[in-house]
Every structure is written in structure tokens, then in C-alpha cells.
Image: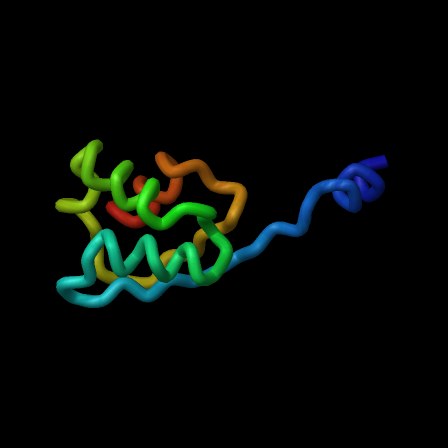
Length: 79
């Protein structure tokens, strides 16, 4: 039964983003959009800026998926 349910779900896209020193929210949003993690780079960038996440972005490699909310993505990139 679980196998059938998972077949009906759209495929999950997983991406490991490599955040480098001085990388901006714009660059991250563009990268996530290019890899089909988010649909709208400008909207995600605005979310990051409006909630002060863009100032807290951490350097490193982060595994993200296309079914994560903006809040989940932001929390992943800032911890």
C-alpha cells in the first residue's frame, strides 16, 4: 500500500547546494531555481530578506529537496 502511494507522488528532487564565502541570497535563490528546488527565485530571495535569513546564511554543503517549504530551506541554509 505504501509503495502505491509513493508512486502517485511527484518525484522528489534532491540537491546538495555548496554555499561559499560571500554568496548572496540572490545567488542561492538562482541556484535553487536552476536545480528545480524552488519555482520562483525572486520570491525566495524576498522571503530570505524579509525574514532576516539572508544575514545568517552559513558556509557549507546543504542537502535540500523540492518539497521543502521556504522556511525549511531558510532554516537549513542558516544552521
